[in-house]
Structure formats: C-alpha cells, structure tokens
Amino acid sequence: MGKEPIPKLILSFALPAIIGMIAGAIYNIVDRIFVGRYVGSVGLAAITVSFPMMMMLMAFTLLICVGGASRVSILFGANKRRPAEQALTTTFVLLAIVGAASIAASFFATDTMLRLAGGSGEVLEMARPYLRIILLGAPFALFGFGANFLVRASGNPKYAMCTQIVGAVSNVLFDAFFIITLDMGVEGAAYGTVLAQAVSAIFGLSFFWRREAPLRIRAHFIGLPRWEVFKRICAVGSAPFFMELSFVCYMTLMNQLIIKYGGDDGLSAMGIFLSLDSLLFLPAMAIGEASQPIVGYNYGAGMPQRVTKAIYCALGMAVGFYIISFTLAEIFAEPLTRLFTNDPALLAIGVPGMRVGYVGLPFMGVTIVTNSALQGLGKGFASLVLSFCRHVLCMFIPLIILPRIFGLLGVWMSFPCGDIGGCVISSGFLIWIIRWLKSPEALVVK
Image: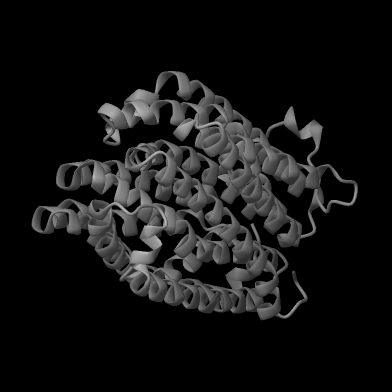
C-alpha cells in the first residue's frame, strides 16, 4: 500500500469493494423482489418499518468497525504488528458485546421500535417475526460485516469482496428456498438473510485464522482489553455511528410522515426506493471504504503526498459513479420500480419519488470521500462535526418543513437537500484536509 501507484492502488481496493457491494445490493434487491412478488405490498411495508431498528444495529457496527479498521490500517502502516493485532482482536470483542445486546433487544424492544417507525395493524403483525429473527441472528451480521472491514484494512480487498459475494449468493438461494419453496413469506426472507450472514461471517473470519494472514486474531488479547484501544476505536467510529443513528431518527420520522401523507402504499414505495438505493447509492460508499485503509496506511507510513493523491482519486471515482446512477434513476425509474410490483398505486408514488430523490446524487461523492478521509486519518471529531451538520441542517430541517408544503413529495425532496447541502459543507472540510496534509504536523503519527 505504500509503493503502488495511487490510481492503480485505489482501483485494486475499490473495484473488489464495489463488486462486493453490488453483489450485496443484488441480494437485497432480489430479497425485496421475492417479497414484493410473493407476499405483496404489505410485505414490503413490513420490511420498511423494520429498517430503523436494523439501522440502529448498523450504527453500532459502524462505530466499532470503522474505528477498528482505521486503527488497524494506521498501525499496520507504521509496522506495529502487535498493537495492530490487539486493535483487531478488540474490535471483534466489541462486536460480540453488541451482538449479545441485539439478542436481548429481540425479546424486549421489537414492538416498541416497530410502532415508533410507523408499524400498525397488518404491517406490524408481519414485521414483528421478521425483525425478531433478524435481531436474533445479528451476531452473524456483525462478525461478517466486521471481518469485511478488517480484511480490507489488512491489505486484502479481494478476499473482502469474496466474503460479500459468498453472502449474496447464499442469500438468494436461501430466499428462494424459504419464500418460494416453503412459502414462509417475510419470515422466510429473515431466515434467508440470517443464514447467508452466517456463511459470510465464517468465510470472513477464516481469513484471520490462517497462518499466512498478515494479521491474526490473538486469544490472549481477548482477556486483556485496554481502555486506550477502546477509546481510539470509538473516537474514530463515533462519526459514522452518530451519522447512522441520526439516520435512524430521520427514517423513523420519515416513515411517520409517509404514513400520514401516503399511507401503507407510500411506505411500500419507500421500501422499493431504499432497496434500489443499495444498487444506485451504496456501491460508491465502497469507494470511500476502500480509500480509508490506503489513507490510513500512508499516513501511518509518513507519506502525506500519497494520502492527498488517494483522496483526489477516490473523489473522481465516487462522483463518476453517482453521475451514472443519477442518469439510470432518471431514465429507468419506472422499469426499476416494476421489478418489485405492477401495482398502479405504488408506481404512481414510487416512480416520481425516485426521480426527485436522486436529483442531488452526483453531489454526494464529495461527502463520502471527505468523511472516509477524516476517518482514515484518525480525525474522528472532525468527521463527527461534518456528519452532524449535514444531518441536522441539510436533512432533518427539510424533512420537517417540506412535507407541510408539498405533502408526500416533500419527503422525497429531503434527499437531494441532504446531498447538495452535504456537498457544500464537506467541501470546506476537504480544503482543510488538503492544507493540513501539506503542513509538518501531518508527519507526526499519533
């Protein structure tokens, strides 16, 4: 990571990450297609009201994995193998703790979260077993997700890609079996997801059990936790944690507004939009994730010029991807929505909603790369400030105001407000990063 030309290095990390993310996106979309075609719009609505709780779980996962991966890559770049392995092992210990809490939440918090997210009546009855199964299987998701981050931080993006592809293929097969063959509805979708995550987790963790692995999980670090390691992991991971947590609140409020202005059909349409988001939006986030270990390694190795080149290269790739996604969403909004349903009511809401929701997408690349750069450099507080400003100023305020004026369309309009406003704020942070990397202070690794 310290010698290859930066464009080639970014591509070697980003392409496997994008392919892996697209594989994950495909299984998410296939999952929703199975539900939409074999269960109906109520099934899509049930999954949609489950999103906030699932995203809360993801928030804690990001808190640990982003911080852990940043710490591992910086220490790995500084040739500090023992501290790097301690950070690696500590990350998995923290994930195990969150997994245990998720199992407890499946028994005590399911109904409360679903009602807060807008679930009621038939939708609530269908969502309850789905979410409970997902939370019971959360440890598999946590370890699979964590292994993917940490394998990439250890310098092996192709293996990280394979963990996602293995999970994606497994999920499609399990979904087909449980939903179509056994006719288990949304519960079948949940079982398929959990089992696929278990396969992905085992495959990912096996990387650190091999003798030839650059870093390994060490049992003696499990019983010797250090507060300093916890603190550094959580400091860097706090930004994506609060960003995801605020998005939980955003989605909870959004679901309530959708129910108010669009009913269950509006909720189902939003479920389709969020499913397609995994294909049109999330893969570019893989570019940011791929750039993070490169930024961290080269910063740790005392090469700030390569860090700057990595940021610019990732920025060009992310913006280019989003321009393509924006074009596809605007031209093929109706065919993409028809993958899930032919219901005229859903099409009438979902098609214009998608076109409005993706208007600001090309601007989002700046926010993603800037946040990843801050995290890769270990600047957790700056990343947290950026995330807070974007969510509060550019997403929550428009979501509160616009639906009062434009109704359901105002909910969709809040997405481009967040994308464009976030770009403006992120640009200031990006300029600051580039200037800092040119200063002598950037040569001092902490």
